[in-house]
Structures are given as C-alpha cells and as structure tokens.
Length: 174
Length: 174
Length: 174
Image 1 (tube, each protein chain N blue to C red):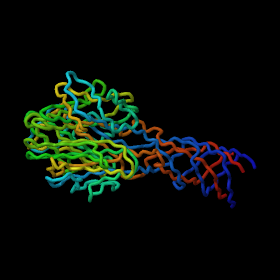
Image 2 (image 1 turned 60 degrees about the horizontal axis):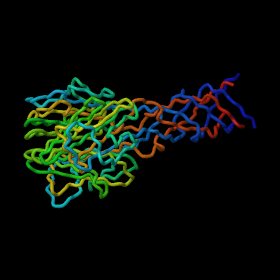
Image 3 (image 1 turned 180 degrees about the vertical axis):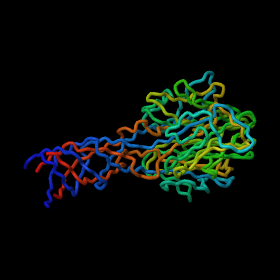
Image 4 (image 1 turned 60 degrees about the vertical axis):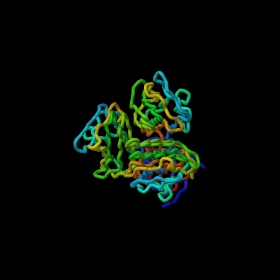
C-alpha cells in the first residue's frame, strides 16, 4: 500500500451529498424579577432582583443586578414595574450612565403596572441595569415586577457555523 | 474505464470555493388575542383566545389555549391584559402548574392595561398557558388583550445546518 | 507534472475536518421614541418619532414613521404609550390599512402607561406604523412612549449559510 499525496488545483462542488453541521449560535437571555416587595428607598439605586429564573450565557450578574454585554451585537431589554395601594414605582433602563427609557407606575387609587422596552446595539462589556428612582420606589413583588432581555444577533456575520468534514472514501469513474 | 475506490487519510480544506447551504432554523412564534370582551368568570380558567393572528410552527393550540414547547430551548412569552369601566382583569402565566408571573389591570376609574413577559428555558412538551383569575376576570377585547411568544433558540447547538455537497470533478497537479 | 481530471461518482463525508463558515443572517431591528411630548391632534395620524436610537438594516423610515418589511418573514412589534396629568394617549398598530392592536393609556388622575405587542408574518414591502388616535392624543415624551420591533426569522430556509471550501491537498492510502 502506497501513500500518495496529490496537489489539487480545483474541486468543483454541487449540492448533492449530505452533511450535517452544527451552528454555534451564541445564546444570551435572562429573566429576573422581584419575589418580594421592595422599597421605598432614599436614593436612586441599581435594582438587585431577588429571583433569577433564567440566565442563559451568564451575562446577568445576580449579585449586582448588572447585565454586561458578552459580545458586540443587538440586544432587547424589557422592564415591568408594578405598584399597589397608592404607592408609586418608577425605574430607568441605564446603559452605563445614560438613561435609555423610564417606566412609571402610579397606583392611584389601587393598582398600576408600566412596561417599556428597548432594542440597543451594544459593544462588548457595555453595562445595562435598572435604576429604581427614589421619588417612586415602592416596587410590588410576586413577579409583578420583572426585568428581562436577550441578544437578537451578533454584529459580525463572522465564523459562527463551524463544519466538520472528513472524506471517508472517494469513488472515481475514469 | 476503471472504477477505483480510494481510502483517504486526510482532506485539507481552506475557504475558497463557494457553496450555499440552507439553514434549517426551527421557527416557533404565535400571536393571539381577544377580539371580544370576556368574563367575568367564577373559577380560574385557562384563557382560550378567540383571535389567532400568527401561529408559525403550530405549537399553540387554539382550541385549548395551551402552548406546547416543540423543542428543548429558550422561549419568550408576553401577556397584555386590559380592563375598562371600573372592571379588573388579571392573569397568570403558567408553566404546567407553576405560576411564572402575574399581570393585573384595574380600571379605576376608567381604563387600565398591564403587560408582563417572561423568558424561560423549556423542555420539549412543557406546557405554557394563561390563566384568567376569577377575582379580576373582566377582560377587554378588540385586541387590547393579547398573548404572544416565540422560541429564541434551541438548546442544542446540534445539527441545524444541513449541507449538501457533491464533488463533480477534481483536477490534480501531480 | 501531469494535470489529470477525474470524474467522481461519489464522495462520502463524515464530520472530522473542520471548516468555519459565516452565516449571513439578515438583521432587522429598530427602536424609536418620543423625546418630547406630542399632541393633542385633531385627526388620526401616523406617528413620527423624534428620537431614533436603533435602526439596524434601515427598514424604519424616520421621516415618515413607517417600517417597511425588507424580507418575507416573521416580525415582532411593541408599542408603549404614556400619558400624564389627566391626559389620554392611545395608538393603533397598523399593517397597511388593517388595525392589528390598540393601546390606550388614561392618566386619571395622574399617570398611565399601556404596552402591547404583536408577532406578524409579513410579506416583503408590507408597511407597519403607529397611528395616534385623535380622541386620546396627548403622548408623554422623555422616552416614556416608544415603538420598537425586529425580524424573528425569514420565511425561506434558503441559502443563508454560505460556505467557502477549497481542497488544498489530499492524502490517499491505497
């Protein structure tokens, strides 16, 4: 048995033989909420949610309440705040020190919920968090108040489909 | 003409020749709502929405109001409830028998809407539904009250890019 | 050195050699809002948002407020309207001349926010917009009122993974 090595000039391919290839999609998604009521507070503060339901990819830090973008890409974030019994609850979505949007729920007389969401193009390491506003800081729990988000897509259309191929045998008609 | 069969040890590939490959992304998304007002009711019940706008992948059963996860993966769900004229509308997002979140809209004096959403990692066949709560069960219709969701991504980074290749001809320099 | 050309009947492949392939995912996402208060108005009108935060793919026209679907596919849209000081704000999500859903926020006595969202399968060139309703048209700004959306996935499972391959060398055991 000989071991030949050939230099090949061109390989023409058409779509006939079948290969399965895994897609290495980067997965980033989180969903947290307040299980307990929270507030009031005297100064604006970053909300640390007491219930973490989902944290795919681990980009949300449950100790600090800060989401750190793991990749350059486009992300979605939704805040829901609820207040009860003549209380108010308001919060801002912050990208670093920049306010993106605000939500304000005012339960006069009894009950209120407010929801807002953003879609943002972020650079890796950008930080997103919810700041509870001291002037309206009585947040109703029991998962009526939540924060969630995920990555829609990465910026680069780069190498995210990795394909492993090996030729096992080759039949020639010559 | 001879028909040779060769055993090949190694095939080195670089990125030069071009092949298009279809991606077989699994698509799951639904959007339903109340066209008519609904309630009040005496016991908590699974909401059956009377208007199905979108049901890509068919995972939402419009007869029962139950969404059954067709794949292991991460999903998003949003509930919007609206109430009018001193009525209340409240609903829970349920995963099986577990409450994920609640929304409560209280139209005192006139009008209220409440929205909440979850991102959940589900196993295939997990069931998600909206339960209308009897103590606040007058739901305003006209698509002010809606339920929607979709799959963000599958758990496995498995075989979802199927590529069909065939070598048509091969030129050697030897 | 000879240049042979072989006709090949079959090429059997297994998953061993590694190739990276770019995925050409089509990216469509926008997020706009009202930086300033707006209204009241005398006739229903398409809302033109004064603050464009994100417009990946350029499908949202910030001059007209109209989103035009760039591809056949499934899309998500969320509207948030806020009102303050006994004012009302209501808007419809329109697909062409068809109302998809309505949101109504009534700030009696002080403050209200309403949020709704749709998931829609659209044909290329379908137009989506927010129509502010004249009977409830005092919209609170400061990014309390927003409009956002994105494409979940394209209809076709067509050629979106383009793979470039070239055989550099081939080793035979014969």
